[in-house]
Length: 551
Image 1 (spheres, rainbow, N blue to C red):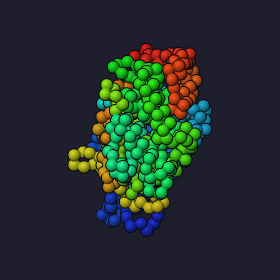
Image 2: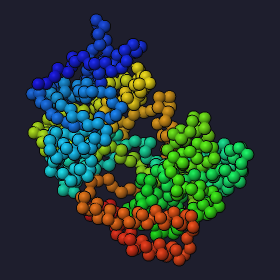
Image 3: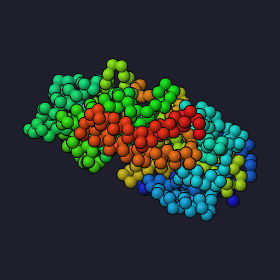
């Protein structure tokens, strides 16, 4: 039987005695009534628009298995304001099956024995859908009629949403959750250099690879940290142990970049002038190896970079002996005073006739493409889609689902722009991360388009704000052509993986050996022969066919 959620009084999760008004259950109250009691939050007319007809339908109940974040203090998802609003508007009640972080066994059990009506929160991935395609409903013929807001959103994405979700057989088995894009993630790892050290040697931030070499030599030859030992400086710290500090970041000056640059193999192909091209067989790749060997052999790179652990990498950063490195932001590696000494470095120029490019991707898709899936056990998918469509019907309801009630962690200004706030009532035991996961679904919300992105300020969210400012510095150097994002038949993925496994190991070893020992003409020819033998050109052709839509 359907609950009367509009007047439900919710249990208190924050400690008694807090100076601010109580936050009830996982939903926040909407203000005080005339007698001083707290009234339950109600949907605004904007957020609830277009749902009156749906509210007149017979109540119906669905089972949804949803991921519960470890930081959530919510015991019943129906206490979240967004789901109360959706039930009131559509007549759809949800019985939640909560799946704790990492509980993959529970998901597998549900997939094989007792399918719920839907899964929410990315607990089912692309491989699981591909392996059990018949367990997930094809939504391709239902969305335009029963989810018009979702349809409109997908048509307004930077990459067409339906292309992102369509399987090779033409079916759509999932819907997206979370942010369409996240500007912070566009730029991958960024080079940072110690400006205090630059001042000491009277040099500027380098703009070319030759200038970087001169700066690193100055760092090597002087007691930069002033500890009396002129030999303990590491001019540039790089390592294979850290996703951000990879040696291949320095391929960028030679015009070679990866959409995601954490693996050597990612740099093996690029889209240029509308075609997928190989890179590991080019003069530019050879020139990069020669340059890196020069840095390594002259003591300008950490000689332990290929062998050290991630902990050792961070320990060296924090010991005050490093002059230059790649990372997310200095503020994630140092205290505030030390971090302020580090400045971002744009991608360096290697040669006048080569345009430097930055690893990363403009407007990279951040949404989870399998965030919400309806199973074939669902007997009334039209009603469940109407419920999801209501949660997609306005920016306000999307953010209510993401972070909880308006006025807490977020608000909307007079121009309709969403901006971030610091909610009241935070404690050491109930942090802002607890708040977001308790009152909202965070990245398991309905799709938030690029132009609905939240605005953050230096005062409210410094770490996000400063990362965005660093990305500003290099964003114009990101490539403008990319591989598409779409689902691929598992058999085709297996074809690529069969080639890539051995090829990836070879490239990693070759890259390290060439940087440490150098490479001559005979060694380069042997490398070209190995690429042929290991199927490198078949691997590139796979991506060429994928790019051209041949499968």
